[in-house]
Amino acid sequence: MVWFRRDLRLDDNRAWAAATAAHNEVIALFVLEPRLMDAAGQIRRDQLLAHLDALHQDLKALGGGLVVRPGPATSAVPIAVADCEAAALYYNIDVTPFSIERDDAVAKALAVRVHGFNGLTVHEPGAVLTKKGTLSQVFAPFYKTWTATPLAPWPSPGPGRPVIMSGDAIPDPEGPIYQPPGESGAWQRVTAWLEHVDDYPDTRDLPAIPGTSELSADLKFGTLAARTVVDVVGTQTPGRAAFVRQVAWRDWWAHTLALRPDLPDVALKPQYNNIAWRDDPDGFRRWCAGLTGYPIVDAGMRQLLQTGWMHNRVRMICASFLVKDLLIDWRKGERFFRHHLVDADIAQNAGNWQWAAGTGPDAAPYFRVFNPTTQGQKFDPQGDYVRRWIPELSGLPTPAIHQPHNADPSKLASAEVILGQTYPAPVVDHAEARTRALQTYKRALT
Ligand SMILES: Cc1cc2nc3c(=O)[nH]c(=O)nc-3n(C[C@H](O)[C@H](O)[C@H](O)COP(=O)(O)OP(=O)(O)OC[C@H]3O[C@@H](n4cnc5c(N)ncnc54)[C@H](O)[C@@H]3O)c2cc1C
Image 1 (spheres, helix red, strand yellow):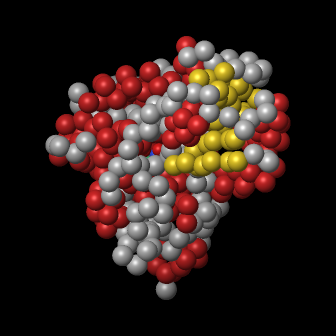
Image 2 (cartoon, rainbow, N blue to C red; image 1 turned 180 degrees about the vertical axis):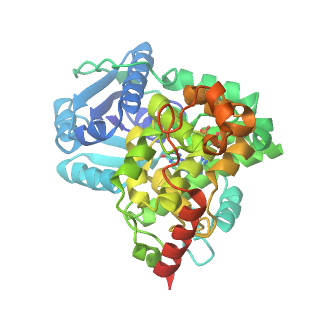
């Protein structure tokens, strides 16, 4: 039996390859884990259900199918193994504390052999170390060793054939699906991305255009292996190398979470645990809803709420705004993103939040505070991204689009913008908020 989790593919899947090489008949199982399903926003839940159906169709074409059972996995997997008298259980390992505890409990409950593989990252957590045998706390040396580590061979499925046993029907998604599902959807995206990847250094920071791969949800659900992406894209051009470097960041955070399961909960730089975060329910509510009065922040939060995805540059701006301008605990933002993101991944999300808050390894220095107005002007110079997500500002001329609060009243009037009514006035004054953040951080660090 192969227990699928975040590896919803048959290609470049070590657990699937090993099981089909060792056994004549293989059953594919997925467990709908209530805790994970409840924690996910609707867009991620629906995308998962669509991926499960696509995997089921792929297995059906081979004569089998996907068995879907209700969780929790700690009871559902042993029951499924017993029902079909499986000789062994295969899966690809995840690095979250929840999955490690769950997998230990499942293994303890089983009398059959359990085989775990790396299907999550390009290089297995623990395989990219310093000369001292530790994980580098700085990304650049990790990346150097990471690039020098040879890729494991591409695993091909063996002759074993998938067979079906009884399970529940896969529930129907409730809303529209974010991306065409399954491995075939993922490969369409890779193929399309290969046409643009060489431009990545010029396009990656511009949220108004499709200048990044949007492969993050495929890597989250495993409709594509990170190893495949790196292998297929290669590093022959500066654009390709820059893209692969980002996938290495993904590996680094996964390697970090494997060693530090408390990554989502505590500042990895301990003195940053002393920051006196503000309790500001109204500020938090406005940030969540995209109503801060800073257009680039609000556009990002609305993109997240409406699509489940947000551009990386804007994720950085929104995160900085929460932790620095509002001085609200990064963990609140991390949990909010984790719920809504279609690509939510604890290692990536917590790691990047710690980066934005300055609390993690190799983080942005705390005194570097993003100015939401100049960030907007620099990375959305025509205001197209803001106009797309904040239609009530769409009539503003470009010089005013990132700072309606500084616009000439006649410009506001002719664009039918009434500050405080059709669009909010800023929740904080950025210059004052910056000073407050620097003082608060300094106090914690001395
Ligand atoms: C506050 C914050 C929270 C984030 N939360 C998540 C999350 O939950 N899940 C997630 O996958 N990414 C997260 N990211 C990283 C990044 O924003 C997304 O991976 C990226 O926007 C996905 O879009 P893409 O696939 O088009 O990226 P591309 O630019 O095409 O990059 C290719 C791949 O590289 C990886 N990657 C790119 N940037 C990063 C990064 N900064 N850190 C780690 N991996 C990266 C991703 O797997 C991505 O799919 C977060 C970033 C920030 C600042």
